[in-house]
Length: 36
Image 1: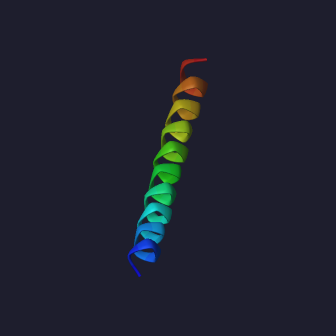
Image 2: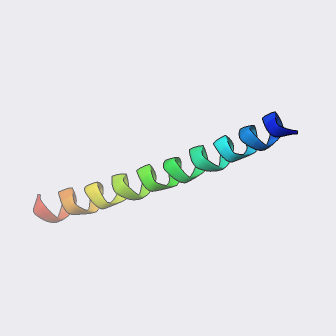
């Protein structure tokens, strides 16, 4: 049970980090196009 919960939490964390990374990339892309 504990291992399963840990795995689920890790999956959630990974998804969250991926989402934040994508958001940051989008911001960088928009900023880059604006400046160029």
